[in-house]
Image (cartoon, rainbow, N blue to C red; front, side, top):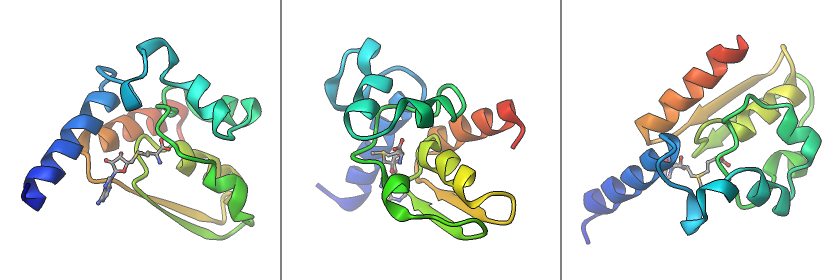
Length: 121
Ligand SMILES: C[S@@+](CC[C@H](N)C(=O)[O-])C[C@H]1O[C@@H](n2cnc3c(N)ncnc32)[C@H](O)[C@@H]1O
């Protein structure tokens, strides 16, 4: 399989998730959000602190919990999806810090923008 073809397939898979047409890893739609995230280390408090819809149940751990972020730091999130970890990191680094999310799936970026403007960050 050529690299471009693989990238296209990965993008298509994540686009469906961003648009709410699919869940990660074959989960049933009803369990694709908080259940997965709680099971891999996100607290209820953290999940309640992000805009509704940011948690797509795509994580494989809670990197912000492990990063010991401090106010004013800059965070780069590669593969940021709808921004779950960006929103959590923003809470840690505060107004003096900066969080940069990068994602190759346009639908994920659209979802992030929609959420960001919904909470006016
Ligand atoms: C497993 S999801 C994680 C999303 C987010 N961190 C979360 O926990 O909700 C992986 C994300 O990485 C993006 N991605 C995968 N490969 C990438 C690459 N080479 N460059 C940029 N983004 C990539 C996908 O589009 C997808 O949104």
